[in-house]
Image (cartoon, rainbow, N blue to C red; front, side, top):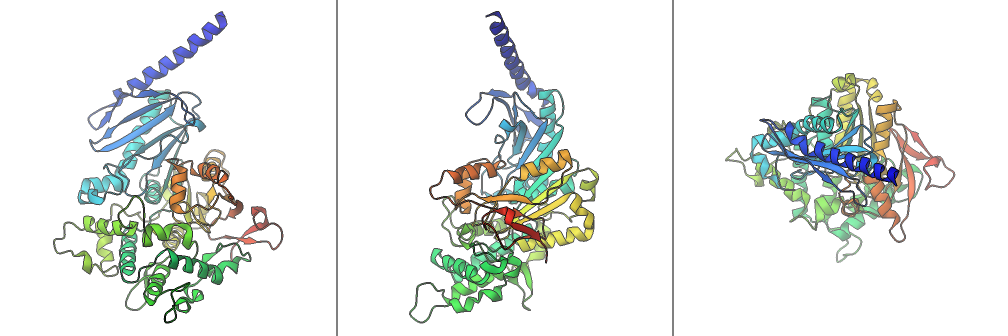
Length: 514
């Protein structure tokens, strides 16, 4: 009994000490940082007992840090929020794996609220300042709570969070040891121009759910077999050209209405696949690789409806253009030219744009970077990322493979969802690379079930960082859920079927490069 009483006393002392350390973190407050007293949060089903600290930086940037009371691995994870931010990101999904976690709203409040772009201070915070300042303060908080600094610092973000991840590597190369940049918006102004023109085409020749299904079937007809397997996935979309789609053959006969498109719908589809072109026909803003049309990106960016938006994401992006050009009294959104006005838009958005991809300082700091992107991502189009990677290779040379690997994912749309095998454990890949110097080669991905983009977001339910595990669990609980695996190959390689064995097994695919 005395041993049990002593054990209970020691356990109570440990909790009491953690409570005191957590509450005392307000001592880190100063003229620029308002750090609230931390509170100890009791353990729940999926989250261990932890210290939660909130506060503000520079009176505008809200942040949150969570640190497990027991089992800290010495690792720190920062989640860079996506979209237009305005809400604090994931700070809990890795606590049970021994990570301390942090995130920020980037200095403004309200998801999908673009008015912050009218404030230059808020725009710069969103662009890069908030993530960096929160990183610096969060590391101080972690060191104060545990009595020692984190041994390894990681960052994960997708979409705008992927953009922010690349910005951290390029502007603040000493902040993180390992970075995972998903679907990075590497050309922000270009994204805005693409979305504007998407809304304009959709107004003239509106696609709907039925016409998108026609496009999906047409792409599978034209390009599914290019990788040697008929599985509803375009394994290497670079080989699937717009000409191969034969879009004009989809036009309805006079009086026809089923399994065909109107002339206006064909023009909208051609634009989506081709992109913005100038008067000579040269592509100024690239389009989307064919494939995964039913994966949810058309719903979000082209056709609607979207439960949490009035209109589509492209319509909201048009409002972003209005906000960022607010100082030009003569600006008229109706006359916006996505070709002629793109240079001016880039100038206005200079703080948000990813800088030139010179990763030499990041390399010198010992950092490692994994980029992943769906081949069929609409807002963060694969062709735009390919151009960014070409520029990066020109600046950094072949040695870039020693600290940067990119994975283009067949059958994946924006950040999550689609018909392909897209649920992959990038977290373990970056940990092994940073902590054991084991560079990732093939990464095995799983098709977790028939999730569209929106369905995947719902299933992930706030676990934006540890999403692969969450979506696989959700898929396993679905009725008639089909699972298969594929290797994700370092770009520019792609997975090619060996010609024998189960086509649903990644072991029967090789990473090749033409």
